[in-house]
Image 1: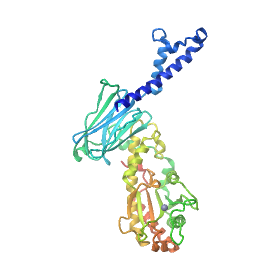
Image 2: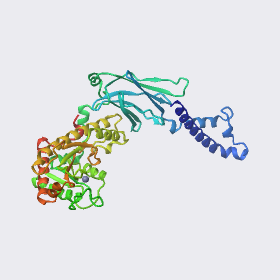
Image 3: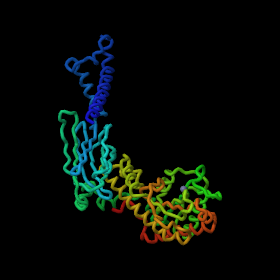
Image 4: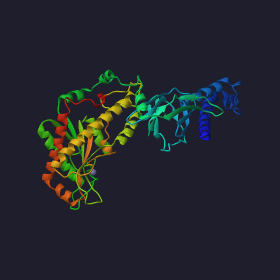
Length: 450
Ligand SMILES: [Zn+2]
């Protein structure tokens, strides 16, 4: 690790000097070259006889590349009594360390650094630390997040100046504590916390406000399509055709109530990438996203419908990735966070996704009370979580319904019938209606729920 740090530092300096020399010789050539072509003075000059060249070299070393502290290594030591992160830095940095629950994590915020560590220690997984991640949270702000397996107390971080070696060390020590103690100390720092007034004052975009007076918008997503047929049954029923037929029936059922607008991600046999399906729901500012599929299984006896929502784990990683993006304004529609200079954006993503997941889970349960009137539902764990890409809009509640198994003869026979498709579409429509009639008042901004 130490050798790695030195090596990186050398390369870094060599690049700097190279730039300095190039700049210095380019500038000095017009005067120096005609007078004395045999002696390119910029390259052999000492600060004493070429102060300008020396200054240029120094300035080049302080150029854009070196404007940020450089992280050259990361050490991790784990014992029962203590977990220590040692971040090796070219310069000291100011850090802010705090803890958050749900899931439990330690957050270290610092100014922008260039992360050039090559040999990073990974947690063993047997102690307090599950994993860690880092990245530029926005221009100028860098964030390091430690995901915890067990509750810890964070000792005061220390910056240790170079001692023989070449780097500063940022030491963050974590010692075991109780869950109650962890929770008691966890929370966003005061200046980073979105107060209720701050959240309430977030701009609401006009389209959303207008929409709140109008009908709910349901985006129905028939899976697969075009070159992607999905799965198929023995009698030749194709998933892509089956789910499109049910989607159209669902549109009819919902529109007939007069309370919903329905948009299909596709209403013909065409392929749509998953990301685009998510984008359609977000761009439309949908109140709900329902993806329809049919399943297959090597065990042909397995049958029945099931409902999926995005799992907590996947959603956290996604939220983390989203939060690290520089421009947050595209992430939550209608909320311009571009001018914010705090982790507020990531808080909002967290909150939006948590609330979205709650809504998705509530809707999934409602579907499972309604669906058995129309078709068989899997007897065990019909509601499951998984990392479906199509469910990953942070601000649109979303479920994926597997309507049954095309590999099961009975399921396939049912699904081939038009009456079954109409029944199932009506049952899903009834669940949507029940879900929204329970949610009182106009649709809220997801992000406004603290
Ligand atoms: Zn499918």
